Length: 307
Image (cartoon, rainbow, N blue to C red; front, side, top):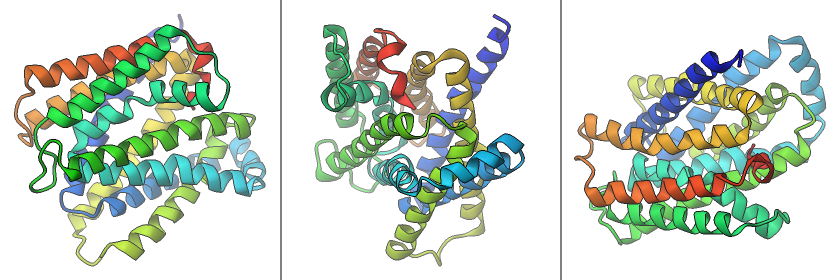
């Protein structure tokens, strides 16, 4: 009760920052190589998270224990940052931010499916139905919501399918990351663990970006927007996310993601990057959100490994 007012403020801030980060990322990948965007936002968030951790005595002392788990850090950095941001940024370059944002909102349903198949999580009929409903809504939305951000992209073509699969693969990697993070690092403070994990991911993404994309064409405006994406949006999202999980639990926090696709789509319309959503587009959005909501309805016990 004593946190209710601040919880509302934090929730609104988290949803707004998530939507803004996707809109800015979509704007950037239209002219900056997606892997450069992925590396830049991860590096920026790493710097902020590290600065915060070093400023706190408890986190600073625990960071040594985190660094002693090198293999775990590399695996989590690969899954939670390298694979997630590479997949979603490459996907954004092909099918646009709103469609990738909707795919990433499948995370609770995907986490349940992975837990049921690989980690022995108990299943319920409602959760299975919700997962299938969410996936069908997301697929329908990706296929009918007009053109992606790439030139010549049409529904049902190879670029649309590839973009959807890349975003889905990145979200899948993050769902696995959630289970492994809970298993291997949950005994340590979050702010002590995140700098090492994000740093490992940033190094991997930077190596891939340098080897696969030309960086000479980056303008100062591009670098400034990359800094805003990483420092002012991505890092605060991680902090708000974990604070809300601590206060309200993963069920409440995961449910907030259902508002994000609507805000992204509305933002694209307001910025004139897309036209108004059709009735069919809104229907698929609602179907996906209903499916995710049904997956979440079983309570926090079965999804507590989301982060």
